[in-house]
Amino acid sequence: MSTRARQYDAEVLRRSRVSDQLVRLVLGGPGLAGFETTGVPDEWVGLVVPGQFQSRYYTVRSWERGELTTDVVIHDEGLVTEWVARGCVGDPVQVTEPKGSFVMPPDAGWLILVGDLTAMPAMARITASVELPTHVWAEVPDELGDYLPAYTTIHWLDQPADGRSRLASVVEQLDWPEGPGYFWMAGESSQMRAIRKHLMRERRLPSTAYDVMGYWRAGGVRQPRAVDPGPIWRAGKAAGKSDEEIWADYDRARDG
Ligand SMILES: Cc1cc2nc3c(=O)[nH]c(=O)nc-3n(C[C@H](O)[C@H](O)[C@H](O)COP(=O)(O)OP(=O)(O)OC[C@H]3O[C@@H](n4cnc5c(N)ncnc54)[C@H](O)[C@@H]3O)c2cc1C
Image (cartoon, rainbow, N blue to C red; front, side, top):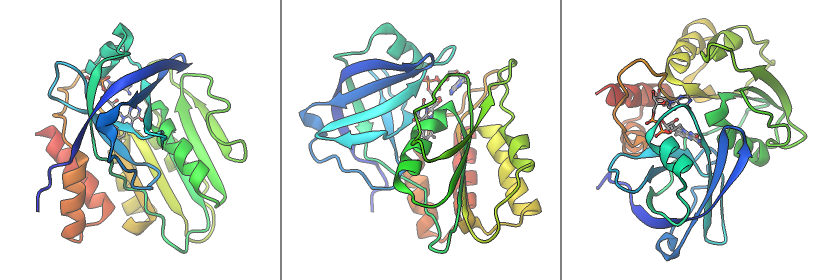
């Protein structure tokens, strides 16, 4: 069976500003015919921008009436960042078929979501799709008051002045709700690695009770290779691996 993700040709129809560092891109065009969401609320696509072969991964904020919306974080530098900042409306792009990894156990009685700005699109979709009591910890530099549904309990965390995420230490000090639930977290990779260890060793959560994903790497280190998480995800699932093992495989593949 081929593990190559299907690709769709699309065009940037519109670009708008959601907040200081978040830009909404709406993609469309006849090449997206046949595109289908997985329905998994943290689903992502690989995006290839003009003149590039490498992809970057973006959450499907919505797929409606043939239009695919993504919210893109603009940071100091970067392939997609610079392309978005230059303009990009009318440009041809390619997107891969979507993949998702949020799988809540049927007996979950609560949901905790933790993430930085890159995780906000997924957290917005998850909160809109789940009816459980949900607590969100969001470490974001921007004012995003109404980005998540109003009924969600949100703990806004300031972005530290040195730009280094402190999400790992926030999670280590959480008061956890009683009973079975589900924990989802995404953001800078080193924070995510620390939290996987914490959940396994200190909290002793079964791997079905959490999903922790490194979405990007802090600068100053060699940029990881762009690796499509999709084939790794499918191969891991086929081999009966846990989510935690699959994301560790993904981190290793990106380290090359
Ligand atoms: C499954 C998945 C879903 C994702 N969903 C989204 C999403 O919906 N929206 C979104 O914006 N991102 C999302 N990301 C993260 C996004 O793919 C990365 O941030 C990507 O590196 C950005 O590409 P770039 O070309 O702009 O920068 P790159 O060329 O990849 O990186 C350039 C420099 O910028 C730094 N950098 C990269 N990302 C960030 C950041 N977020 N903040 C600060 N510095 C950074 C790097 O360390 C590097 O030094 C997701 C990632 C994954 C794996």
